[in-house]
Image (tube, rainbow over all chains, first blue to last red; front, side):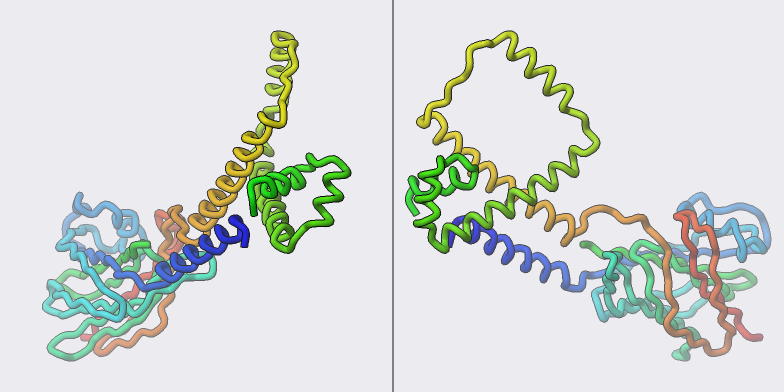
Length: 157
Length: 160
């Protein structure tokens, strides 16, 4: 066998090993921003940066005052769930169901969001989100105000 | 395969053998030689394709012509390359060709397997299931997100 052929075979073997490594499901780094919207007052908390453009448009224009209450960073391995508490006393959980690699190379995550109060499930939704993209869950009551949850996840690759 | 045969194969590939040597080589060619020639040809096609694509928009010919004309005027003595000088040159060319081929393949694999570039971030979201208890849920789309796409909003209105 010639050197060139041997070299090519070694290269192909290495490339296939790399492919296997890439195919393994990575852990997701998820960020949950919890924002409170109020119809009283005016202004957007300076801590709200990335989400500001979303809050300035419908359907959020009826709310005039937005405050960032909390930002949670969750490390979620595949098929795992991370729980966190909401300011309105409810319990939420985010499950990283699986990593989805689209044919065009786009990385996406299948996630499940559950919200419950006193052991009773109030919201249960499963969605597929682009890596780094944002999905918003809004409308939960918090005193006379409203909560907005913004979810975004990254996966190392 | 010895050095002499190695060298002959490379010279055959480069079209540097005279008719008699060429006929002799072809008569004694082994399967291993054919395999090596096919690999060299494949590598040449790959490299030339890449280099042509990269240089398609670059006009270097006028510069090269000017430089050649200048060198010709300033150094009229022709360079004579004896076989002893050519041999290490050919070896270097073969090593350089193989190295370039491997580097090209590695770069292609890095780009197409690992995809290191950062694709633009979009908020693409497909809701697959949605169940609510004690509330009404609406899925809305906010158009013209800052990154140019749409943003999904799961809006829940709690029942009184």
